[in-house]
Image (cartoon, rainbow over all chains, first blue to last red; front, side):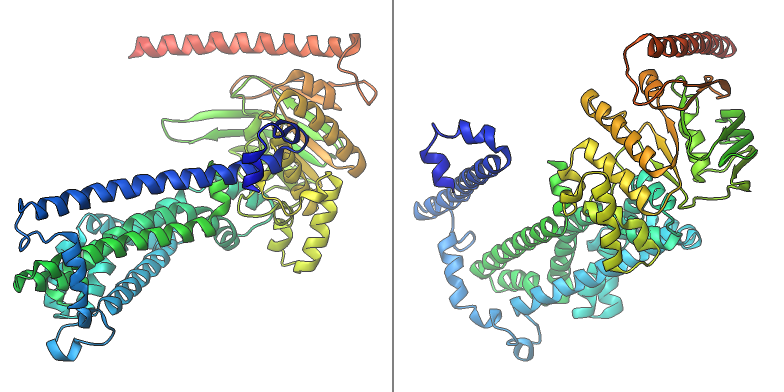
Length: 296
Length: 269
């Protein structure tokens, strides 16, 4: 389909007049491909330059490979550190759970539980005036406390382990998201609510059939932003005291003066964070297709 | 008071009792007969939309009474549906599901909802667009879906708040004709708010002119022209001239008053 547009430029104007939508769609597909390719080239260039300069500096002995190991070295380290990346290894042996994949899954689970609870709390605060008046002032005060600032409390209260991390993620996103939920629901266009009411909707029906779907786009944006915050909170907690997960791997690397391990951990943190955001973006696009089309 | 809808000494003050008090409507006496096509015009900000919101039951009056079949209006009811100027279709629902929204609220089965929604979509000429979503429809089509949505819950009275204001001139003409067809075919009562005099004269059985804020009934003129009407010709021009004159005088008066108020305000401050 794309090829036909490209190879028959002379024939294009005629069908464009006769049947505008299909032609536009075909051109759209072609342009998307071109744009994706361009973006890919820039991506490779951007990353390639950094890696290239780094590798060159190491090869020319401008930097100490012990402190700043070049990418090929710390990525190669993955072979030596394989036991840390296998599921269910390391827990018993070292007393710490370095298992990266398990840690990622656990972090994600913590984030999702936090998100869900915050969403419910926000919805309740929006729907019941008394809940809102009782809880929002406190929540507003607690929200600006950065997730990282909760870590000491978490460690003292829950000890070193999973629960501390869960707690940090939870408080890190819970308050902000509760506020955001209330705000997103309050911002739902008045005309949507009025339309439902003249069609005979009761209050609970307005909530479920209108407020909920209408506020989901704004919530998705917020969750996506907070996902990064949550991810950072988990890592900070893992570095400082939780002693498990990717954050802990980075710290163990420092303690053993194995910068290969540290950089490997950092690279994985970056990659997982990026993939998380990208995956979430995909979900957002699938769920909210109607909104994307409206905004373009 | 034997009309379908009646306002008796109706008044509405926004933010009553605060220092941001605004009198939107004052002492409105109005009666709408069953099956009548009533058009309300007036200077902008005269409370036309407020009047519709009160009739729809979305807001409550601060003075006087609103009656529907002799019963006081206490809240929204499916019998009186409001059609908005801004897009009010739910973007996450297809045209069909938008039309069937009111039935869903009543717990009508999915199959029945679909059947009835499709029937009304056919009536507004959009049967083949049932699966499309609002963003895939033009502005005129969206308003037609909104009208179908109101008809689908069985609204007896259509309250229309400048429903065609956002449309281009061509579409607006089409929609006016379309609305008249629907109205004639269904025998519904229509209360239509607009600031377009041509639109008012073209559509109305009767035109009510409101004064500038606070809105009062300035004039109530039956349009004694046979349908289908032509927008050219001496008859149309005569009505048109009458309303232009009425509104121009009213706007001038309101403007002077406004200037006076502002002058006093600055002097006081």
